[in-house]
Length: 599
Image 1 (cartoon, helix red, strand yellow):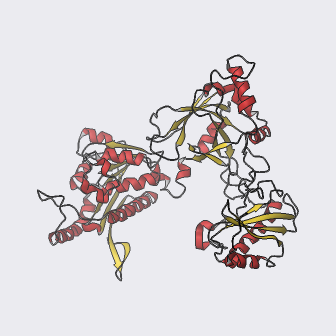
Image 2: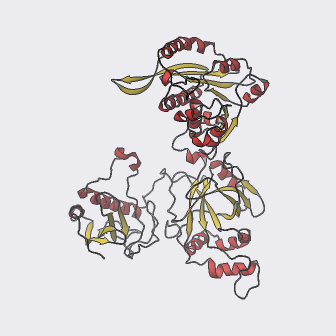
Image 3: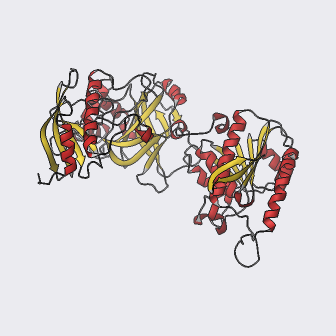
């Protein structure tokens, strides 16, 4: 233990704690751990509730050298409570100094994500921060002993699986697929994993399909990008358990022995199941096991989704490797696996696993289902069409087609999501590729055609529910008006004025598009726009033959496209028939405020 001067901030924190909380007694003053580069202080906590945590328990408070900044964590003494509870990290591991276990309770307020709106935010000054954390620990201990760490209706949380791999494993499960799994009689088999070919660190495996031991195939539905055939898919083993595998109350297994024990508690002989299908994975470079188990969305609810937790097994016996005294063959290989490889003391190498189902990845915010389930056509993938398409895909719309026959030019890039690598390539094709990589469930197609009235175009348009014109070309609206559709559509026209200062929106629902009302409303404003054009020098598109371009910055485009998405959502949600809206940017006392509706 290297000597280090105790900072004044730590001394003040200790004085605030000493005698400030009746349940707390300081056993050892601040000490510096050079290896961890942390300060720690040893305390005893005495509470009036007896339970799984003793009435007298010893804890270590660990802080960074920059206290009151940095981390503040509290860990149980190595000889104290070895159990893991809700809102606690995995308590099965011991710190290298041999003093405490690594199961730090979660003392953050449940509203910490709301920052300053938290009803009891963690203080950041020297005198209060340590005091606050120890007070929270006492509350946590009492709640643990009274079985009140979680309540019905709380969001469900998984125990901490100690991640020991640089790889991800992703899956797609929801309530619908949960019902499908309930009807599957065979609860184990092989699974195909694909390694995504895009450059990513860590690498990402995603589940392509499951096959049961009797040959039943259970596909996994992904969008266009992840549905392609990736090279060299990996075969792994899958097993569905009855519940989350845990030991010591709520600790995820840290060793294979703990994993076998956790499965045995559920009446599942994990080694016996692996033996039945292990020959399917021996040739793989990595031997991976996927453990599925049912979980609810909230505490107290019924189970409603299968969660897949991946683990990398030790490298199993290859073709000629057999246990001593056994002939070459599967029995000899398996006996070697059991005796020499799958040993109880071996560490669990868990992958980070994530559910990439649409319900999960869009839970931060998505459009209403009446939009996300529609087939959408966007005519024009210029700056406005591209930004509208991107906002739709990021908000949960997955079935989109983009129609445009132009190519990307360098001048487009100042206000377009595509980049230098796409110059000279098709706008619609490159945008569809870009959008399919944004959302793993996106199925964005490109139509490399100019919108012109024809039987082919009419037939194509019949397949869509929502048609959005972003070309700002009158001829497109003229041609749309000529088509009699067999079923009702929602038509949207989006265009912007000079420098993006105005936004013109026209939305209509019906079997036939009619533009007369819109043109009558918009005409006076367009005349005013022409006056502005005539008095301004427009920017040029390169040298040589003079060619003007429409002036508007990308931030103006994003404001216009964002507003358009909100208006479209309101229109569909309210089941409107027709809407004409004109917006204008405005400022107050020289400060930009936003759009205001002027018509």
